[in-house]
Image 1: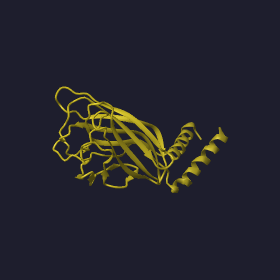
Image 2: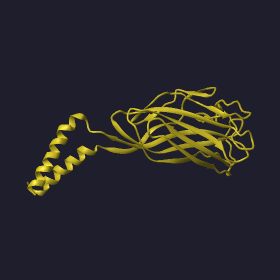
Image 3: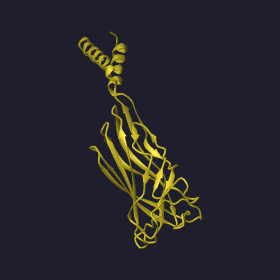
Image 4: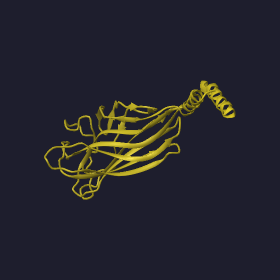
Length: 236
């Protein structure tokens, strides 16, 4: 057998063994749901390789400031998960969290790479706040064997008189998720400056890769490819 045929057989066997993978949003939302008190219902999820467990997310006020703790329903807060709880160490010292769950595919290999949050600052009336503030986000992943806790600072600088959404990405450094397993992501918001402010999430997205596992029906092809490689090795 010539070298070209030998190379083609070896490439075929490699492709069968590895499957395919691509960087993609595993789960994410833009918060286009309906607000009811501390809850947002009817959340639409973008998913790949996972299934969202619920279409509802709820604000849980770990320490509640003088605000009600409900989600703002103002025009500026439309389509944002914005909590009426004043963050900041000298003004209420409020903190809040929310969480969502998802179940991984039973047939794919899923690797979590990062988590991106886009947020806006708000004042106590639910209108955009253009002052400079810093949010301390903590992202906790629990479930299966891939538990992780990531903390990242989110700095909103002001001062052209315009509200600006700010995006920040926390790295999960390639956490492989267990197949057919339910995970929970908890997002906690806290303030690091003393002035006090409110924060709203515009969108969240968990990024990673999804690798397809060869179908069971491919086992015969894998065996044939392996045998062919052994035969070629003996003939060389």
